Image (cartoon, rainbow, N blue to C red):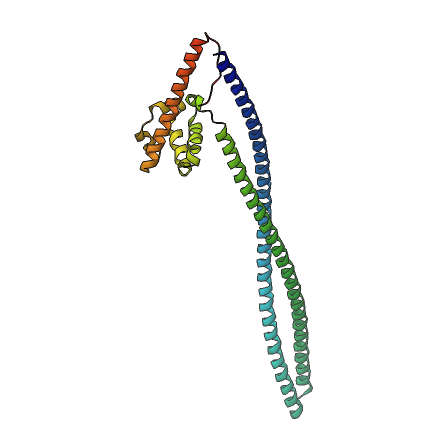
Length: 290
């Protein structure tokens, strides 16, 4: 019996070392996960800033397009005025010719000259205004081209940020999976009575190479809402398993059996430990995993 006790103590020490190593790896993974979360948050904030800048640029471009359209309309209107003035000028020239032919009085000639002069001034002013509008229109076109180039660069940067975000999300998923695997490795079935609902779900996910993974979400919800703990597993029936969301007949049957095996195996182990305690007259013993 002393030999068995020493063997059990040695196994317990090995188990403790393995647990400490797993805990260290788990803490390291958690730290890396937190760093990735912070980086992902920064990328989200940068993405929002770029989207705000992009929206401002788009609104500015739309404003310039409206102004450009107004200038084009004004330019067409000025051309129409110039054409009208040209027609009036031709009419005046015709009238002048007629006056000359008829040798009208000097007063009429003076009025005709004043009319020609006024029309000429209006025509010159419209031509100058039209030239200014054309120049402004060209400047607006250049501004629009410059802004469109900035928009393209921003869209490219946003695309790169989205790619970085996707990579971080994938790495985040990988880290979560690693953490989950480490957590599953640390499951101590001997202490199932102390489990909370999440511990029960983690244990179920570890069974039969992930056979019950598709039920993870519904199991989390059901066990949490019903406040199921490890000590309740000894009273679980197929009806309970079905109420948790395990509808498939074979999955329901096999999972119920797995729970029975867990509780019965630990009862046997406890009985063995009690017998060893009795033989060794109270000497504490370590747990041997069967």
